[in-house]
Length: 215
Length: 219
Image (cartoon, rainbow over all chains, first blue to last red; front, side):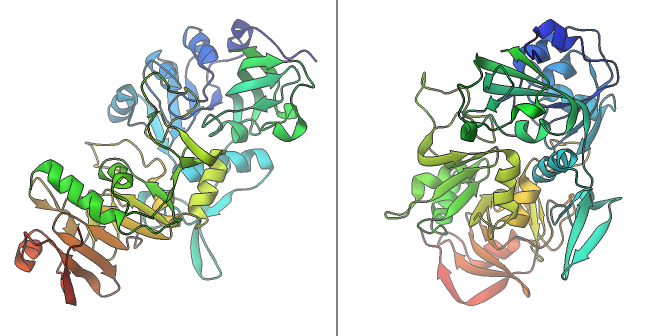
């Protein structure tokens, strides 16, 4: 199957009301070109699952600035004044999830698990409405898995089959998000012929990646 | 002490809490100054929650790598032997007790070691980021913070802001002294020579227990 498509073709797969996981940490490791195309496209009322709201001009926050986002599930939005303003005037629905919990919820969603038990958030507002389970005398919160209609990832190197390599600190949420959505699109800065990435260097195996775009 | 001296005093004293070989995660603000004050012979490995262990200094201007940032979005370098990984691995390291110490700031801390540093309802709502996981997971939680906020105590009987974590703080370092959180309450263990015990108590809402062997603050 040919996985390489144009940015426009990828953006056209985004439909109103979709839940989309966006890889990246403060826009590093985010699919910058694809985000720009979605920002300029027709789809709206999106729910984004991502670590943070990045910046109004870059990363997931670009979609807030473009008026595309109804809800966000994230750990931090302090770098994006538009997200904070939207949360305060209730035009943007926000569900805060501690960063490590968010990573595990996404991982659980892709790994066939019914949730994760974490001590993080016990005794704080994070525990409200959640089941507490005691294991060997220690209390944990049951945090439910996350799954999305689409995941959009940023990678440094892909082969034509869709095996991905991330450099520096660009991995962040990308490897887990690759596993937890119905449709997965990766934007790679460099695309090489299949066979040019040694198996042990692959961070995200190609089976998780449906489409590739050139970053 | 002016603001700069206060910050340097806190960072210098906090640096003495770290041991050679420690894996350390530093919060923003005063904690980022701590590596400058590590005693000779003490080398620590810095973890950054967005996915790297072995964080090096800020790159020279013009040598920034767009793929390499810290949790605050600033450009970083990697020391020899550094490793990068996903957020799931990074928080496995944090939550799993593999970080020896985290040093961070606080809005409020109380006698039971409860900490509030992520939210002021209606005013400041950035989200908790990785703070809740870090405080629950790190082996030692050390606060490096100014003793008061605009003259108001931050060390309280009971936090009234939304908590970041319950009962996790081990040590509090301010420009006035060093305090340990114990099951009996907050024990003043070291006192900065510019202040008296009465000064510290007056700037603290919690009732301080004075260590029988109260020492001058190590500087």
